[in-house]
Length: 138
Image (cartoon, rainbow, N blue to C red):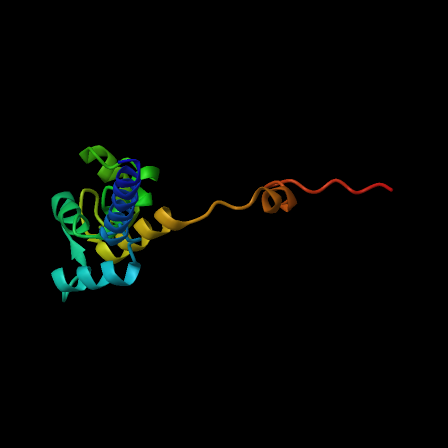
């Protein structure tokens, strides 16, 4: 009986490992894939004229999926959060005009999702903004 139990446990472990290995893994979003999606949905013009259109277009991109690094860095749940996020992608010249460039938005999403902050060593080597370095004394 002990040997049967050990055999069952080995078989269970083997089956569990096989299931985990064969289950679909979440993949990292890619800019080229999302750009292709953008060009499929907006083949001639990548500019939209409302917040709703921009959110709808962006919702198709993998970079905005729930497991994306962007979702951990930027909160995009309310219209106010979206308006603030989209502000520098709006090419509207007149006050109140909305011309959201989706290509700029996609680049911004990937820039925020995958950018790395400067290393602490690099920050320490940079002179302070507007200041100068103190002379070294020996």
